[in-house]
Image 1: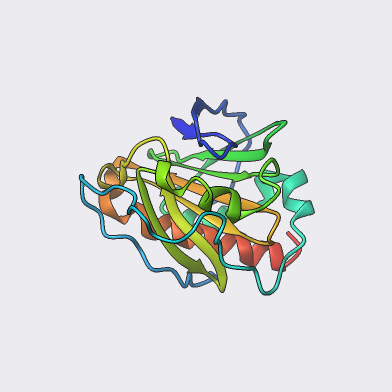
Image 2: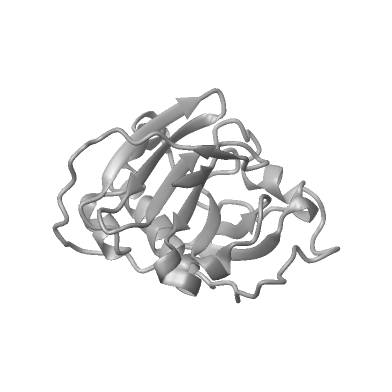
Length: 205
């Protein structure tokens, strides 16, 4: 399973999976307030859309230090089951760019949550490079500004979608959902997972 890594350029790297058992019990779920991008194989970043560093401000910033320190706490087993990843195995990762956790579902597919501490201006660091992204669609997730964007390649039609979310004006995380069997539903599932990350963050996960 290939996932984007923790830089503004979102370069690809293979995330090592450390076997950690997770249950697949279901529970309450947060409802994402996202607008899902329309998928077409020819989508590219719009030209001249917004000025550089014009990211929306975060009205109610969150302290994400607990999840940055323990990125595999970003999603629960119930959250993973809600995005069709049952009996998922998790693997933490970190470097000078931030921290991350990836999960691989027993039946296939996977998800990655990365905390991009290297981007000290939050979403503005992405907005400054907006023209380099293969697709770009601003959205909101549970009241927090976000953008569906991937600078590597547009693979949404193949079940791979990247959603970046600002939890403060200094910090973002991104969710990459990758499951070919989900096809164009990948962005909806990435939005659901991102909303769960925020709910867990507010709940002190």
